[in-house]
Length: 239
Image 1 (spheres, rainbow, N blue to C red):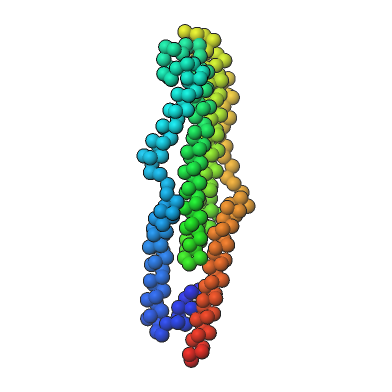
Image 2: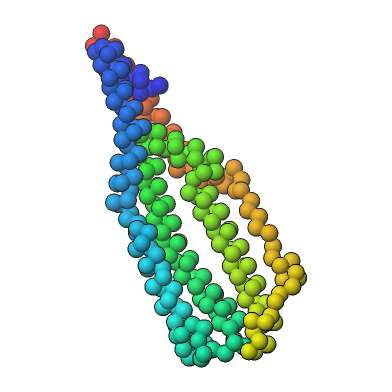
């Protein structure tokens, strides 16, 4: 509203005002999101999916090789050098060694995405639509902060499930030796698996993550009001 008032006060005719306002709307709603998205990627580069997967798999193999070499004296997975009586232990060691690797790689990727998002939010000082978009997504639970919260909870549940399976193999299959694969778990094992329950963060949590967007919106409102006041004062001085 303040921008419309300011532009109308500065323009000599209503046609010019409408043209300027239409250009501002197109720039803000159509062009700016794409341009700022590319600018954020340039400022905080994130790897391509191929590069990310290659780096992740390379470190997973390096860590796994080191773990197997220390525990079993070999880097050959599931080979003759590791007896069937230790396959449950090998699975548990392999899983637990991989957890920090996933945390490092995905943590760095997600931190980069959040820095990109912060840069776009600050642009809301000049383009309020971007800050409004970020704020509305956050309060609706569809922003990256909510995605990260859900994904982290799902990953922790997956690890708990894997650890339960490994512990069961160590306790029941490994003692069978060469009959390792003859072991079949009963219903009691699956009864230990807790259901995955993700509680959506409360409104206060969402609001804390959107304080920057809210502050940018308020600052943008003040700037727009100041612009309108200056434009109206100038028009009165010329009248």
